[in-house]
Figure 1 (cartoon, rainbow, N blue to C red):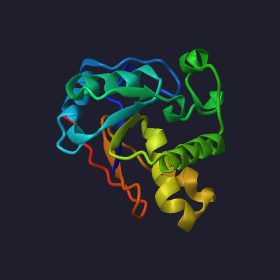
Figure 2 (cartoon, helix red, strand yellow):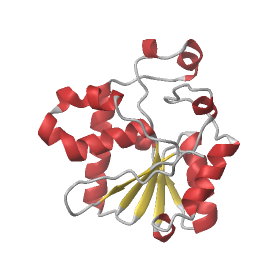
Figure 3 (cartoon, rainbow, N blue to C red):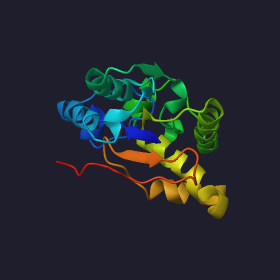
Length: 184
């Protein structure tokens, strides 16, 4: 199984803002969420952690690894969707170093999954971002039925809580299920 874990609550999440490629840190609540995730019965038996390079995801991965002591591989492809600059608040525009289209982000998620299959990666956690997880789920479950033209509708109507987990079966049918903790 591949366990995709959304990062814990970040400073921007606590303010009700989007993060994109910003370098927000975890809040105290986000650190607690990551530590709780590390003792999840399914997660505590993984062999390795792959993490986005953005601090909120990497810090979540670090908190999990502090408990499991299995190692982390950082991979920029696990970053959140950066989005067009005109869709973000002014202060976030200034922090972001680039932008990508929905299509580019979608292709990045799809390409990452192809790499996972080619490398035979299994029984790991990927600590990433809500948008990336939703793109990955859409690529695996819905694209063949709905096509890419429905992706934006799907993306805008789907929300994951901080530290949510999606479980992906690598070798069977592509499936995912949200195993998120309820918000406390």
